[in-house]
Image 1 (cartoon, rainbow, N blue to C red):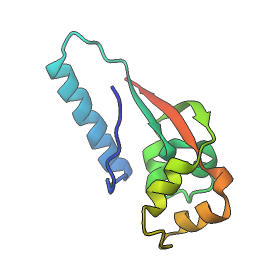
Image 2 (image 1 turned 180 degrees about the vertical axis):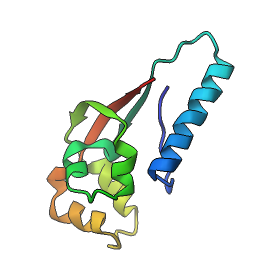
Image 3 (image 1 turned 60 degrees about the horizontal axis):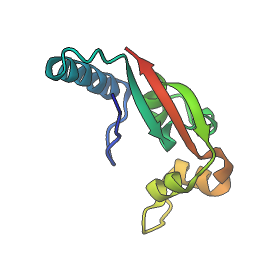
Image 4 (image 1 turned 90 degrees about the vertical axis):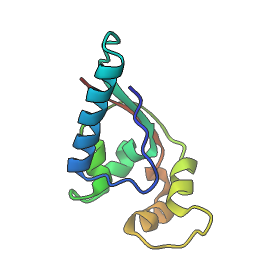
Length: 114
């Protein structure tokens, strides 16, 4: 199963777990013979260098925790687009980190085994 993170999603540990459980139930009912074995996510939200520099209570970190990263790519453009959008205004500590340390941003592919 592929994991998509909608803009503005609540990434708290509790909501992520509820979403994972809902997806498992939905797909097992709709495709009972498929035998899904993992959830896959390819996102800037999983990039290990960024995650290491977030506080322990960060919701992004909570989202990333259950994923096992199987690959990375240092390409920060998607992170910058998602963090700043078209307006480019500074509001969060994550945005300040992105401006000061763009090298901490990229993509990662992670899985959760079911």
